Structures are given as structure tokens and as C-alpha cells.
Length: 421
Image (cartoon, rainbow, N blue to C red; front, side):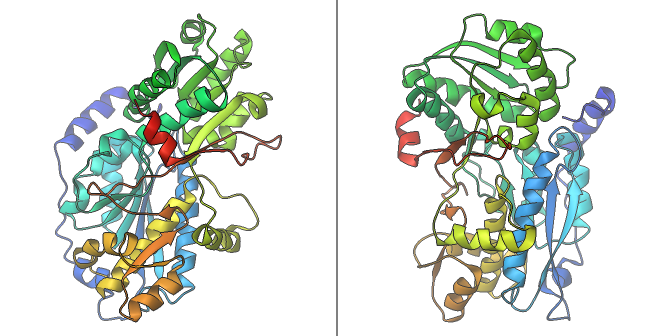
């Protein structure tokens, strides 16, 4: 949530936004999405990310992944001769700002959209189909586990699976028996609580306390005292960076940072480790979508290095990367850049049956030869199910002394399935 937004203004805008499904006539869509009279016109990939607000760190994740994906496509012939470019809009991680951001982005006539992340996707999820624009959202909100939106695809595994991975790591890897939960009141964070609690109990653990906090408060000493009243072995957590700075400063004063804290993927960032302080390398952990080690991931790493240099990829970047490649392959198979045509080819190029391929150039060669393909990308297989969801394992990572992430401990899909409550 954006703490700078007045609550009364927020309420009026939210009420208005909730009642509108924006349908643009998009008279220019026919020419812009197909390249018009110019067979080599650039195609626009839209981005809706929080460039401002309490979760602005997500915009770095999103834009880095999109940038690497566009590099891969553009350096291998583009999409039937079309190069890709981006147009961006800021949703500030706030549902109130997401509809205006969507409207702004539609003025650029994108052929596909990457984002939003979980905190704001529900504010606009019904608008992609109405405007015939395929969307690849990022994030695991459990509200989308059984979504039925033909134009929306999720390339990250659900938070219900991430929650189980957090519980498994605590109970089985670390041998921790008692826990308290501290989660902010956002729908995204609250979606973790039920599956996490059920899994931890199934694995033999006991949840002593669940604290729901309001982001952006001046103190969290009361909630911390309640969470630590039973001296838990571990804290499970999810909140934004501003809240983290205040909450962990309070926790340090109360001596509560000697206990392991295990959080969602946001908590894997350097900003959280900095807020946690000098004990981050020993006591701060986060569950992130596991990075595969196959040829697709190796190819992604090479592209990422070409664009950003020899740095560690940011979380979720391989998911945005795969989204770009899948969209480009779907257009190629459909022999059309018209979203209404190629949207039905997304599952065809990303799921069995078909010849497996791990990079854009190789996949295009197979399509050109009339072959079916099964893209095995940076994130492994992106086999979309009936609800346009994918399933994967998770890694629980910590921090090195320089606050980069450790390699982490992998929790397999089989372990997640067996541990779900």
C-alpha cells in the first residue's frame, strides 16, 4: 500500500475502479498489434510494475526479467522480423492506482503485458480479456489458483505452494517445532496464512500466535511481544520494506532477531537484509521460486549477463524472461502478432506434446520446420494447467556476508505435495 495516499481519496477511487471494467475500442489495435503497413514495425510489450510505493523493489525484478527476455528475442531475429520494445506504467503496488496504470498502458497498444504482481493483479484481471491483450502476471496470490481468464497466464507457482515450502524448511530442514506468524493485512500476505499453518501442523509443528499488522505504523512492539510470548523457534513473515525497517528495529531492541525468520520471496532482497541488520546472514531466510540448472536456465544466465553484467539475477527475473519468449513463440506459431489470434497458442508452445527446446532461436527453427514445440525455459517447464497456472519447487535462501543470496535449500514439488495440509 502507498502510505502517502489519503485514505478518503483512496476509498472513492477504489469504489469507482471496482465498478468499471474498462473496454477500449482500440481502433488502432489492428495496425499496431500486427505491425500495420510496416512489416518490421516494433511491437510493444507492456509492463505494469510498482515503480513507486512500499514494494517498488518489485519493479527492479520485473524490468530486469523483461529486459533479458527482449534481448533474447531481438538478438535472434525478433518476432517474424519485428523487434520488441517496452512501455511501462506504475501501479505503486496499490490497487487504487492499478486501473489508471492499465488505462495508460493501453494507449501504447501493447501486444502483451507483463505484470502486475500479486498485490494488484485482481484490480485489473478482468480487463485483459475485455481488451484482448494477453497478460503474464507475476506472483503467487492464492486467489488465482483456479482462475478462469483466457487472456491471463501465471508463470510463477502459487503462494499456497510457497507457504508449504516455508513450513517444510522450518520443520524438516531446520527441525523447528514452534512458530509464530507476523503478516501484514494485504490480501497477498494473508493468502499465505492458511496453507502455511496447515502444512506446519501436518509436519509436526505448533503455531503459537498469528499477528496481522498494518503496514507503515510507527511501532510494532505490541505485536512482537505477543508473537514472542511463547518463545517460538521460528517466525514466518510477510510485509513490505518500510514496515520491515520499523518492525525489525523494534525486534532488535527487544532481542528478537536471534530467532530465525522465514519469509516470502520479497524477503530475499538486499533491502530486507539491510533492514534486518548484522544477523541477516544467520537468521534471515526467504522462499523463492527455485532456479533450475538445465540448458534453458544456462541460456538465460548468458542473456542476463549480456544485458546487466556479471551480477546475480534478481528474484523472478527468469519468470518474466520466459513470459517474453513464450509470447514471441506463440506469435510465431500463430503466424500473427494479433493478440486475439496468438493467445490460443500460448499453451501450445509452452506445454507437451512437442519437441523440447530451450532457447528462442532453436524453438523458432522447429516451428519454421512445421514441428510442435514444448519450450523448456529458464524456469524449467511452463506447463500451464487448466487454470493457466504452473507448478514448481522452491528454494529457501539465506544471505552471505555481502548480502547476496546463498544457493539455498531446494524443496521439491513432491515434498510440497506431500506436506500440504
